[in-house]
Length: 55
Image (tube, rainbow, N blue to C red; front, side, top):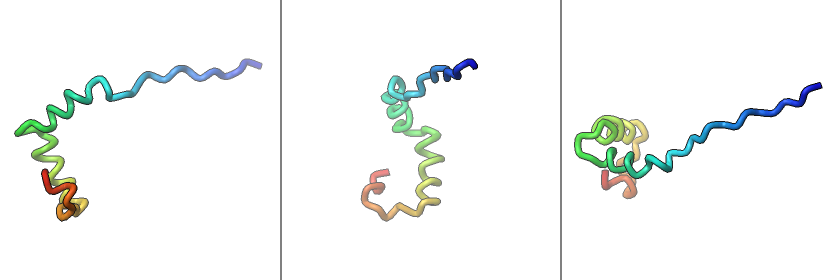
């Protein structure tokens, strides 16, 4: 009987693009900051939390 050997998984780390993504999201007019974040905060109802008050 042949033994099953799983294939190696492709790397899924965001480390090599993390800095670029942070800069992109922080830019004025970014899709994430202008559309996604306000709606996420509204849905989660966490606007009163001091941690999130700087957005």
